[in-house]
Length: 182
Ligand code: SAH
Image 1 (tube, rainbow, N blue to C red):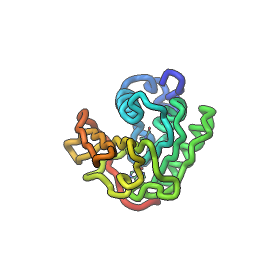
Image 2 (cartoon, rainbow, N blue to C red):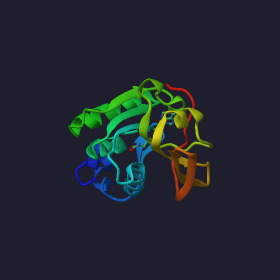
Image 3 (spheres, helix red, strand yellow):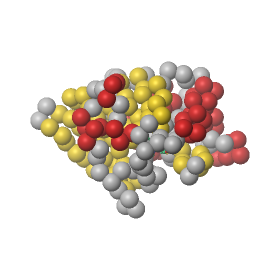
Image 4 (cartoon, protein in one colour):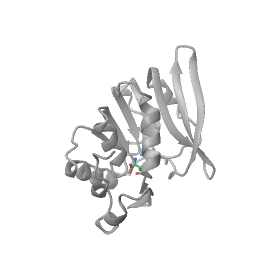
């Protein structure tokens, strides 16, 4: 994370706060996640394994995407808002990280054409675990996502040979996962 210039991912007016451990607005009612949360989710996603192929849902400003790329993952990232995705593309280019596949779409359905994934990370809060995402997880793969409305927690869902193993982690605060794209 030291290698990712977070100020490139927020508005110039907020650049002085870019290295504080806080979430910040990125326009269209969305936020860049708090660095501690990005660290926690990235760590849980890989769990000391080779990064492999990762699907991110909720590209936002592209900061989490940048961290995943720096960690050596092959990254696919889906965002439902076209304007936000364009901004993420510019931000990632400014940070000289151009290898992510950015997709304009609804992350509820995952990305079947690129599945299976070794890891799936969702950065918007859902009410439950979208079935399509579980199906697109490789065996041994890990899905990390916030679940809940006012009272949210991170959950880790592991696909093992015996089935799904679900673990509740830290309390968090994310914007909601919304249907459709625009
Ligand atoms: N990872 C981002 C955090 C973005 S906030 C970062 O580091 O900045 C969550 C993002 O999820 C928002 O941009 C929002 O538009 C997007 N989102 C919400 N519902 C979605 C859905 N169904 N599919 C894809 N993106 C979605």
